[in-house]
Image 1 (cartoon, rainbow, N blue to C red):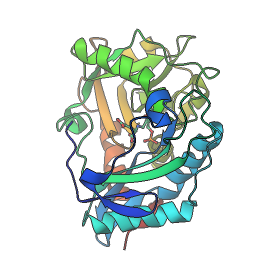
Image 2: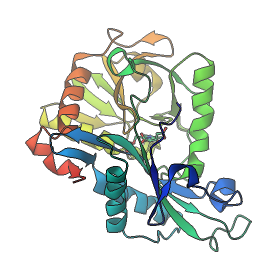
Image 3: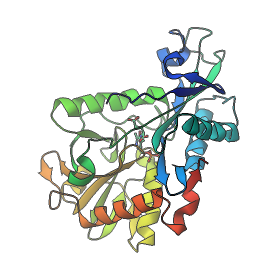
Length: 307
Ligand code: PPE
């Protein structure tokens, strides 16, 4: 998906022109994947742009950094201000937000401890992650032949740049086979997550999603959807899921910042439920998008207003 460029990028506290936001080719993170990042969205509301769960995303950024002994040289308050300043500077009403912390240029070799750390924030308009029709029509997915990295290889609690090369293998495989997205199993054969989304099934009116211990990212959209579903009166469970749980589900959907709530209509060429967006998925999307627009009092504190 080509990036829609905007004017400014925040680099270590300065707003620089999009075209000038560069790093050295010998930056540690480029060679060894030693960066951590976040993906956040700002939504248009009646009171101007508002950032969805900004605090939660920044907390996860610091947790990711801690796992890799990476000291972020800015406070969460400074990054919060940077995000808001950048959205204002680019005159955006809604956008995707990508904070990135990298080990930079200094020394080569796996040891990262002497590399300087840089913080970058970029924002750009980003539409539906899995295609314009996906939110309504749903996507076709494939269980990948690539397993999700185990918890004692790369901790899924960290959103580290290098860890995404696992998802890259799965994503390419699924696209080459004619699917929209991949879903990975862990080494025990339980469902984890997609290359950039958590997964839920609906079975007999109950929502089920894998435990984070299965090896999926502790998704913030996942938590929001679990809370919204419970508030709507649904039972929500965390369980180990196997592939046939998906084939036989009444409904199935992805959650993610980029993917929002995307229905899954086929898994490994098995039609899920009615083969289109199910009624509970639709209800959850409605509640989710109202909340992102600032229309739901109950979730008012999930939004951080830019102005
Ligand atoms: N699992 C993975 C592997 C993942 O990357 C994401 C987010 C999720 C689950 C959902 O987490 P959350 O966004 O907190 O609900 N993927 C980000 C990056 C996607 C990309 O292609 O880049 C995102 O959605 O921003």
